[in-house]
Length: 370
Image (cartoon, rainbow, N blue to C red):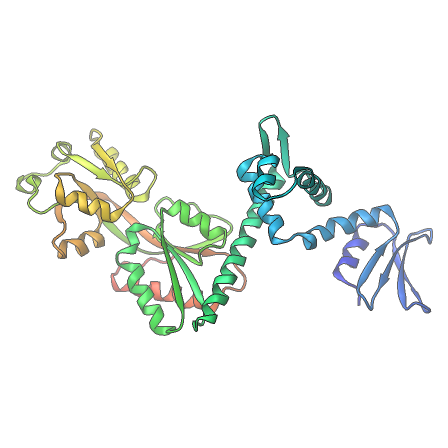
């Protein structure tokens, strides 16, 4: 039976064909003038190249097999440092050896991976594409190591979830508890970060699922996404705040106080800015920008600062007496959803985990179809 490599080589040639030789039980790859340009050993599934064109094609196909994890780490370090000498120093490798290896890899790939200039190295388009795959491979290897470690400790599998602060207070904990009831031996890794950071980690294989606000989400070929629910945005403050004594609340009144808001570019901040623009109001006095939910709550309790929060976050912390809903609702709604990688054979646990999030989102109402 011919190997895949053999078939690829044939496609690069014109009027080439195989001739069976009885004594060696091998196949000869012949050109149109019956010149032997290659040999195939079916028993060992190997191709021996006798012509320059075949040697070139073989080299291009074999470079991926010669790459090791440490080679991928070298490629990523070259991109981070932008310097062969610094990468060699950090990797305890001789600079000439590293330069030679990179040149040989580029020759095998058939394209330049890094541009050399006076200020260092810069990845080319081919290089950037290879770096994306290198990050994914290394991420998957780390995940495999964690999964095996989890099995060694008696857990059946390990799953990683990334979440934004807006969803970490209610939807994520309830859904995780639901999932662990289905899979008592599973282990969960939960990381909180802004959505743009989480989505990068998801693409690199560091997370299995990301939950957060999708208001600013832009579709990516490598990811799937699904809306779970939508909710309003409320203006909040501490109990006994002077604002609560006002009979009329409008943007002019809100502009009399300083604010603590989420950083620019975050979905809830974008909703706030859009609502101000739609109302034709003057910009608010943003005194503090913070992405820490707990720090925001603490500062709200000890100052006269105002802020915004989703309906569910407002309800949860109002019940605990930490904050108060001012009664002023922005003319904007935010959407919570989930993202996962576009994979042909996802682990069964991911399917169950997504279903847990769907069921818990449906309990709060307003579930949306993707």
